Length: 257
Image (cartoon, rainbow, N blue to C red):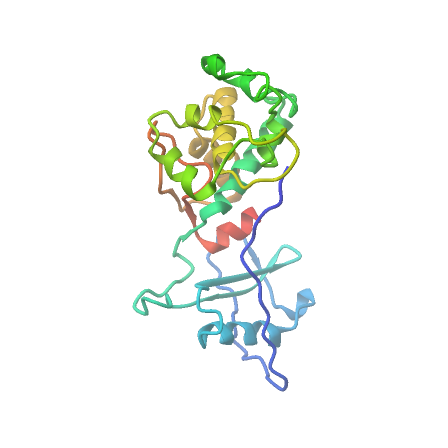
């Protein structure tokens, strides 16, 4: 239903460099990953080692963790100190805030709900799931479907920086997301819209009776052996954010990827 954003991958190659024998060898933490060597999976270890050294030397100062998976095998793992807080050193147990990668968890859960038959039609009107807001329903927004929310093409007016902050402070965030004015016809173009993701989580709660954190634990985290996560931010109605704020270890983000 949507593409999964993964960690940035940048290779830095220095001619003549030989990989260290222990360069980025994944640790065995008994968390379900199969560990292997880069060579066995067709990856040049010199490239991986050069990439890690480039991060350590400050060429990629915003990177704190690198996980490389090839053919389902973990072939490289390395962690770094925080560029602005050298006393904060990341390791395999350090959770990484996923920011908008949280949206991919919501998307995966929505796909599971479709697969289970809990959501039968992606072209159903969004307002059919929110009868309590019928008074906000108008001809121009009645054409907005679940598919439009998943593809961020609903056509609502939305400024991500401004409206996202307002939604977070709204006493009724779902009403705030639904009562927006229309800017264009649904499906016409893409506009990055975290409000639509929060509405998707509300739909999931309506069809499953479970909030996004409970649903993710049961349907994704437990089956994948992901045990150390934190939903760090909540809406004013008490529900965890579905568009941002999920923390997980990089090895576990890689499982989701």
